[in-house]
Structure formats: C-alpha cells, structure tokens
Length: 132
Length: 143
Image 1 (cartoon, rainbow over the protein chains, first blue to last red):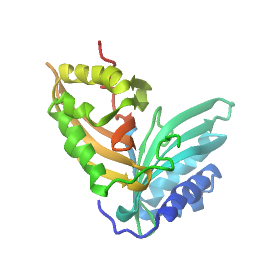
Image 2: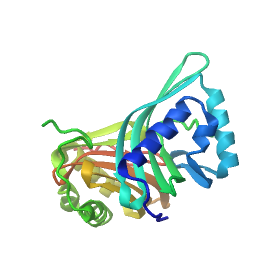
Image 3: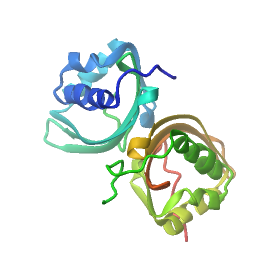
Image 4: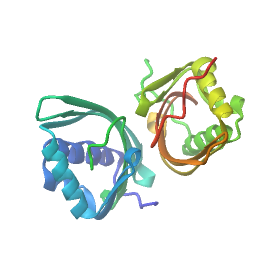
C-alpha cells in the first residue's frame, strides 16, 4: 500500500528506534501501542504470523513482555524512503529469559507509516519467532 | 573514507537507479537465469548473506557465482514480484520485500515471502542480506 509522506527522515528514524523500540525495551505497553494506527497490521514474514488491530497487538506485546526478563534492541542501521513514508532497519534483538538464557536475533523490520504512525509492520527474523 | 553499510560518505544515485538495479537488472537476471547480468550488479568483493540460515557467499566471481550456478541448475523456474521498496539514496541502500515463486526440478511450486537489504558501494551491490520465509534456497555452489 502507498501512503502519503509526512514525517521527515529524522522523524521516521526517531519513531522506529526511539519511540517504538525504546518503548518495547522499557516494556511500556501504552507507549508501544501509541506508535500504531488502530487498525495496524503486524506480520512476522519468516513465521507466517499476522496480528491486526490494537487488541491483537496489545495481547501479543503483553505476552512478549512477560516471556522475557529483559528485551534489548540495538545496533540499528536505518534505510529511509521519506517520500514514500517507509523505513527499514536492521538490528540485533537480545532477549534474556527468566532463567538467564540469552537469545540473539539479527532481524530486519519494514515499517509503512500513515499519519505519523505505523500502518503496516513486516518483521523478518534470523531465528524462532517470539512474537506469537 | 572507510566504506560501511549505509554509512556516511556515500555518493547518492538517482532514486530510480535503486529500484531499477533491483528489479530490472538483478531479479530480471535471476528470473531469466542470465548469470552475467546478475553478477554485473555486484562489486568484485561483494558478500551475500542468507541471514535466516547464516549462509555466507563471498566474492562476485567465487562464492556468489557458484551459488547462482547451483540455483539456476536446481530450479526449473524462478519468479520474483510483488515488490515494495525502501530506497534511500542518502545512504546508498535499498531494502526490498517481495514474493518468490520457485519450482525445483521434478517438484511442486514453492512460495516465499522474502526480503533483501542491498548496500551499495558506488553503483554496485557490496553487501546483500537475504531473509527467507522458508528453507534456504541459496546454498553454496559446488565450484
């Protein structure tokens, strides 16, 4: 889907890495969901998993936040298509379990932004899908 | 200046260049098994990594060539389409989502929903990362 451009390059990067991932890492559910449109679509392409709408996203993130002791996303490399309201980022996700075990994933997210919020999110993971 | 993926010091190319090298040159070459056209998209010391299986192919005329020779031999038909791109002249990079329809010899058609991240050095792919929604089809070649 094609969406009207709105956010600047810097604003797109800030939305993806600071507003969104910083909120995920802080397990702040309201701030995380505030990044999404109400009817947003969230797909984990490497696992054929799909979540749509705020209610499904809330359930997914609550389960995700509860499943791990700490969640860290870092080492972002951002690719920005400002005129088409799209941003892609590669990053490492470091997930520490309640037993202390550590899972490291090298992932890529594609975000399509409408009116300043995520309308569509596509996630490609290097390993098992924790976003179920 | 040392090159890095999407790093500073890149020389921006026109926006259409990024879409065209991915679709009209690279994947057109892959789908039509035109090896020279495919390899012409890469720098000599390019590296292609299939991330979901951590398979690394190094060198345009070594590992990458061997990988494509095997791919073209093992599959009777290959199609890439339904593209959505994030093209970024400022960082000299383009990331693409797409559907793959691919048929192994003697087998049924497989459907993948993949993405690639392409980081260019000048006007060639220098680092490429591939994510696949199924088993890795980009295996090391026999060469």
